[in-house]
Image 1 (cartoon, rainbow, N blue to C red):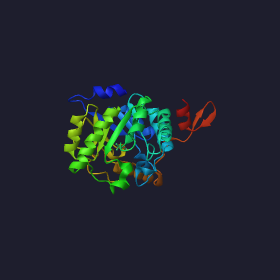
Image 2: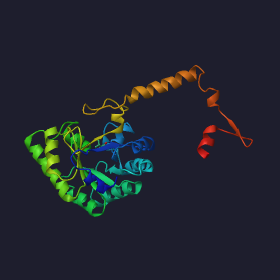
Image 3: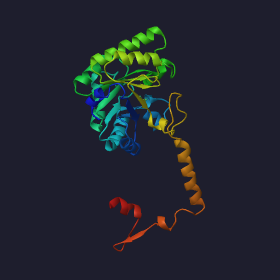
Image 4: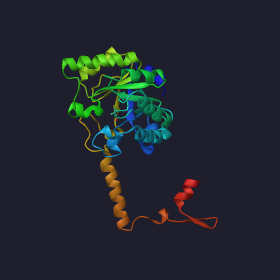
Length: 278
Ligand code: KIV
């Protein structure tokens, strides 16, 4: 999927699916699936590194994970998240972060918010790097919001959000993520915009949906109520690990067929190495 396909996908009856990925293994599974778009989200600070919020993500960390994902995701749109404060320290640092993500393989960047950094968003777009906007519950502002709360609930907040969405479109963003806003507001913003709106915790009326991969696979903590778990991943993985643990302790594993060495050309080598080397 290319950036241009995004516009074509915005038609009745065609929804866009986006999922996060942070590592090569799960990104390769996303690439095997039908999902349209992969996001290296700054939620990796929480999911992959155990931080309590996304504020710990840096441009270098985002680039490291983006590079791993890009090795697996070669035929889908790959979006990299601009981390905390990366667009708030001026144009130079913002472009340095964009450069790191782009060189790591991101075809587009996602930027939270608008207020105070519209000029930087515009400069990035004019530099040829597609930008996905992100409004609503933008997690990098969690402390300003006083927690992970639904945004745009009162009239003034809803009007501000709708105006910002239109402004992001005017600046040239190719898509918008709307996170944790009332479904009616998400529906209204989706109808107002020509660019696709991808929702998360924003009801069913957007052009597409995004979820954190570990949430939908049931691998990470207790997900927010808007998440649908498509797999009971934690239970399945712990069951598999317990099966391994039990078989090791009962001397059931390894069996003869999992043998530890093989003879090849008179040299003893571990089978794993032989398999990898071919
Ligand atoms: O970082 C992230 O995972 C995100 C999505 C939830 C939209 O920004």
